[in-house]
Length: 179
Image (cartoon, rainbow, N blue to C red; front, top):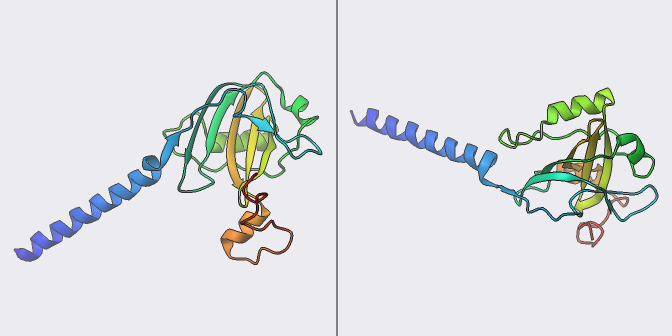
């Protein structure tokens, strides 16, 4: 009888712990980002190193302090990808990361499909917004836009344990901090 009680206690403890971890990962660490009108969506000009804000509306975003790649945002814009591509740096090979299902304006699979089909274009917004992490902005032909953070070459090396090398900024430098 005591063995059954201990088994039930152990099973319930595992379920509660698993449920707590699931909640923390999917809901607990995320916060809504307070919009800063005219500043939230910016792109890096061709040949420049200071992002420039673009016209946008209906901005909403989430972020988490637990990881630099948890940032996700959605917006609308009247600007077309072709006109933006003439002025701003493209982000070749950008692929959005899956976000939490409850932030339903950001569908990473649909964004990735639009990028692959050519109905969306990805732009570089800011290099090293956090060490080894770039901010990417994608704009679709129908005026929807998405923002996420993605590892750059230095970030991929740093996080997989490969020697970073001299081409990457020092993690303690202002450049690596996005400043």
